[in-house]
Amino acid sequence: MFPERFIQRIRTQEYIDAGGLLNALKEPSPVSIRINRLKWNRKPVSAEPVPWCTQGFYLKSRPSFTLDPLFHSGCYYPQEASGMFLEQVFRQIVSTAGHVRVLDLCGAPGGKSTHLSSLIGQGGLLVANEVIGSRASVLAETIAKWGAGNAIVTRNDPSAFKELHGFFDLILADAPCSGEGMFRDAVAINEWSEENTAHCSVRQKRILADVWPALKENGILVYSTCTFNPGENEENIKWLVTTHQADSLELDITGFSGITEIDFEGICGYGFYPDRIIGEGLFISVLRKRGNEVNSKQGKRKGKTTVPEKSDYDIAGRLTSFQPEYIMRHREEIHCHAGNPDEFNLLRQKLNIVSPGTKICTVKKNGFVPAHELALSAGIRNDVFPKAELDHTQALAYLRRDNITYGEIPKGWFIVSYKGVNLGFCNNIGNRVNNYFPVDLRIRMSIPKGEPKNIILWDD
Image 1 (cartoon, rainbow, N blue to C red):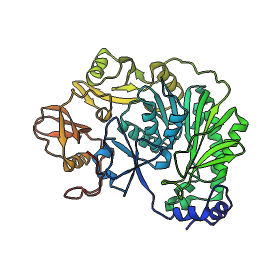
Image 2: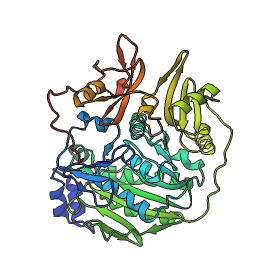
Image 3: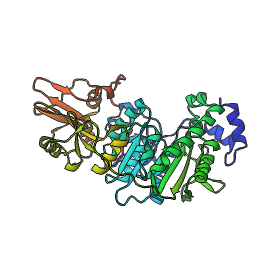
Image 4: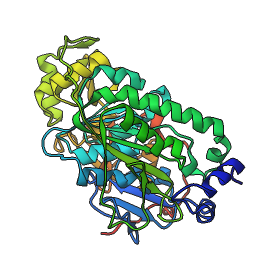
């Protein structure tokens, strides 16, 4: 089942119990979610908490996330539990007082990005980056669904961040790796080879060297992989400390049974092995930067963004609670960008931006079309649009873009909701109601009849 050369290596690898690990990798993957407290204040019935994450929970079985409207509205995110350990870095090392700038360098599909968004709060700035176009689009959708409004989504190679000298307080490099920690999935096993582990190690060094200048003095770098291979983990961190000015930091793991502390020539890392913890395989290490980077300076505005008109500010002020100085216009679209104006100006000079923040609407000759992102945003004014509360069957029909009956709704734009949480917009034009749920996000699977049997149940 597992590659023979992999088995041979872990049999002699320090910190690993090869027999226990291989047996654990034959078991089904645990299922866990992390809740978005901006939208949802309940917890799953009979769920066990993830020890190192205050909003993380293990589910007893895998539900159909596709058939749960609360998933589509951004109330929670299905995230692997080991990756939620990121919260402990913030609790123990990172001060979130004031304005914190964070880069998630390899952000797709968005689990760690949405976690970072929650950890820094709405006063912080997150740049969530992904180099592959299709994955960057998925990342932008995940960030929009989360609704915090504190993230800019970019699509750049790590080398693009070299010019942002000393910009970020914290950088997460969740590096592409050989994927040994995901060996419960046959795809990960089939893609593994010794040649690929060596290739990954070289690429990871390049990524770390490229992004290092963007970290400020005394800033924090969090490096993680989902593999057990020392050549991609502690040896890479040792290389970085040796070739750059950095200190390896220790975390307090005394309250978390099963996490393995890895000591490699003075380098401190943490191994999450599936035979000892409930989760997938993970390696994480934390560094503090020594030395000084000269901060990047703001330059002139560039790009096709136009100065908003008074009517744009009026629309944004009527629909949202966003500050006027954060409002921008791109062609016919009105957005609220994340980051203050100086930060955003600098970032759009240096980076390819996929999403600047929250899209509010598209301006038309006779009004505007509200953006789907607006319905899911924490910045929307709750008293602007009428609401139609849907049951589960109606909510799934809406998410399929089917035509459904909404009851007595005034003409014009209104929001549909499920369990009090916004799902998106519809427009009552009198003789019919148009469904504005995005076509590319619609549910394509067939919907079973009757009461839902495979979705998460929640405590009251």
